[in-house]
Amino acid sequence: MQTSFTLAQLADPAIAEADGILRACVHCGFCTATCPTYVLLGDENDSPRGRIYLIKEMLETAEPAKGEVVKHIDRCLSCLSCMTTCPSGVHYMHLVDFARSRIEATYRRPWLDRMIRSNLLRTMTDAKRFRRALLAALLAKPLAPLLATVGLKQLAAMIRLAPAQLPRGRLSRPGVVAAEGPRRGRVALLRGCVADVLAPSINTAAIRVLTRHGFDVVLAEGEGCCGAFAHHMGQEAAALAAARQNTDAWIRELDREGLDAILTTASGCGTVLKDYGHMLRGDSHYADSARQVSRITQDILEFICNIKYLKYTMRPALKVAYHPACSLLHGQRLVAPPKDLLVKAGFVVKDIPENHLCCGSAGTYNILQPDLANRLRDRKIAYIEKLEPDLIAAGNIGCITQIAAGTGIPVVHPIALIDWATGGSAPRALQSSARKARGSADMTSSRSA
Image 1 (cartoon, rainbow, N blue to C red):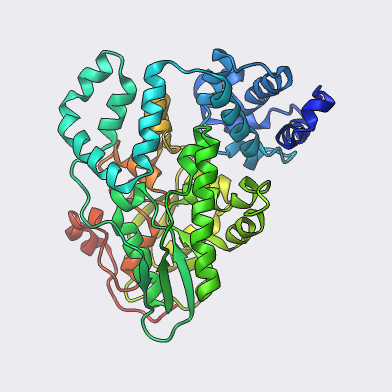
Image 2: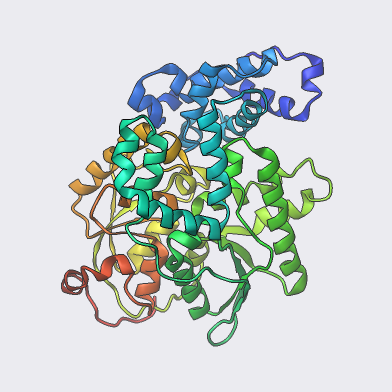
């Protein structure tokens, strides 16, 4: 794609990088076939190629972002399916992230939109505040239809996504969980913000699997939100502050006793952690440390898949519909590890048709764009239910919450299933149907594989 930035504009490193990304696009249009919003709406401006044109014009003119541009950029899920498809290697993720930060710097949103975005960011990045918000949402659930009717669809979506009851379990605290038996290594596990409140059992299952197989697990003092929420809302200062805070926390642990890996059970967080090196590339104080953090970051399933001789104690032969979270499939290009783990554990894994298309969660997308998000969720669930699975597995808390809101089929994180197969208890989502699980599972002990 030809660009026309001035030499003065290209002196800005961010514009220079955007120019390189834009020039890599050859207009082929392959991305349109795999873009969820283009599949739904058929509007060129709601395709990656169309958004690239809009971003190009916004940056070249150096004018404040216009409402029409904001509308189409806001509709982007950042699912990154286009990057998997693109034959030219266009780094759309960095381009759209930069566009969002430019929008937030130059465009004044309507007051209600500003209020919702601000409160979402404040609430979802603070575990204690988020827990209080969930309690309020439980009390307000009867009001959701009324709010939607009067046009407050985003508020209604927030309330509807809240679980029917507060999840059990306390917020995790900093510390070290020692390995069982001989120590094989030492890893840090990101506690996260939303996952630690919505589904604390996921991190608990991960810790059990890791310690059971000889790893000390560090919950680092001083870590916080990974910065993904702020980053995808264009709040770049807040995103970079989160990246610096976490980098400091993990570098302290690296300097203290070393770390073999930094792990996360939320693939959306993992995609951002692996990008810290790029996010902080211009910060001379943090650039090297951030690159080091990114280099040793792995998704929990990626790391567990590389542990040899997992200690399986049972092989529950349940049919699992595996939903590959976009942040795993497209953001981190992790295709095989999650499915390989489940198959080796004895589960019958079924691929979901159109598995490259997003479920509509995408961080806060299912709140900020509820109509499109619900259409994507319903499309996803229709394909899943045709498989008639016993359960659905998804490696990201956002996907789990989004899909569970539209189906009665249990939705669980794969690490919870691996915990079950290697000596833990059945995931709570399955316990209500434990009789069925026992009837269809092969509970016979087997040799470690």
